[in-house]
Amino acid sequence: MSGCPDRILGRYAVQRRIGAGAFATVWMAFDDQLDSPVAVKVLAENWSGDDHVRRRFLDEGRMLRRVESPHVVTVYDAGELDDGRPYLVMTYADQGTLADRIGTEPMSMAQVFDVVRQVGLGLQTLHDRSVLHRDVKPANVLFRTVDGQVHAMVADLGLGKSLDVSSRLTLIAGTPTYVAPEQARGESLDARADQYSLAAITYLLLTGRPPYRHASLAAASDPGPLPPLSSEHHPVPAAVAAVVTRGLAVDRDQRYPDVKAYVTALADALGETTGGTTTMRRPPDVIQEDVRPSLPTAVDEAPTEPTAARPRRSRRRRWLLAGLVALVAGAGAGYGAARLAPEDSTWADVSDETGSLSVSIPSEWNRAAAVDGWVPPTEKRDHPALSVGTSAGWASEPDGQGVFLGILAGTELPDQMPQHPECGPPRDPVTDSTDDGDVITVLYPDCGDGVTVERAVQVADNQLLWVQVRSHDTATANRVLDGVETHGFH
Image 1 (cartoon, one colour):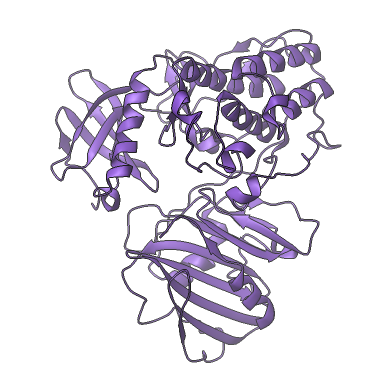
Image 2 (cartoon, rainbow, N blue to C red; image 1 turned 90 degrees about the vertical axis):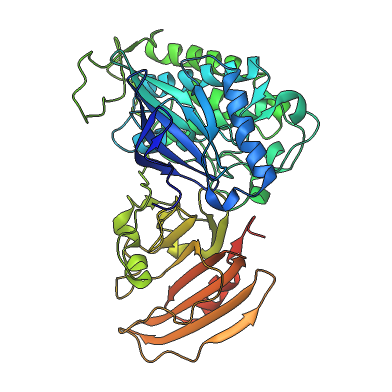
């Protein structure tokens, strides 16, 4: 398999891939000496020659080695593959991520607090060792079973920095939806940046939606008024809402001084709501094989306690079909499509979870989105991708409208574009050069109620951006194409 280490890596027997990102792939392996499963994180092949990325990868291992906490992923070992790529041997999270979990069942206030409390303990431990995480989000919160109990752990310090270094020089990075405004602006940082991100996760778990849906770090730098947490259908107690609102203050001086203070204030507010109990009962000691324990349940939970909204689940898409057209047509079926609230303005901005891709779309298209990546045909590694449209199946419905953006490997523009037999004959391909790179575009008119446009852009020496737009009219399709942006590929 491409990017796969040897099946036997020292004393570790590699079993299967469990995750991949822009810079690394994570494999499940088994430690024969200690008779225990582990996770092996390997630097991606396409970054193996980049000294900066390599150094950042190794820095993550060093920072994690400085921390001992049940709520922070542990690094046990490190080394190099035969091809020179470094790897880290880490804690294996057998219960997946918070991003996987949050849509499986509604969460009570006390359950939300227990997750936030454990993540807060991990972050505070990092801060006590002078390490700032800088990318706190659901995908970086892992769960593992220890003696029948499920523990939340903070993971992925790929953007982590020494607090001393962060106070002097900051790389503008992070996930736009959860990043603190001062981090998005590239200012010096302290622990309040991670506290902001933890408050954003709290908001998500309580309401079923993130506080903002920023299309870019530029948008995150000036987030605007915070939408109310409480609604008629999903009420949030005023005391709890006040704590989260303060935690999400744009001015960090108005936030809590650190994560510990934020979690303590949240516990106090929850105590006012539930009569003083936030103790959590754990899952049973006997865990069935291949069955994920449910989130913990509150002890003596007040019967009138409000239930947090059920966040829409968004699964990472696994592309199994051969053709790009077929893949895009299934854009809603492969994901648990995430519903997006309509924007007040005529057009809305949407981005993928990495902040690498963004697009401006008509607000009436802003109904269903999948934002967390794809595996292109003939490839085995995840790449950034975004699908948003009038419904989860917009690409295969006769009156569907929407746009798909996806990164895939490629050193030159394709000779052939995807075909659309449901449309009239395509127009001649148009080639051009833009600031983003060389471009080829094909218009397919007479597609039932509208048009389809296919576009490929050479965004990097070894990467292409594929774009598909379906619209009722050519003018809207062109405006959507003009609103496509990429970040960080040059």
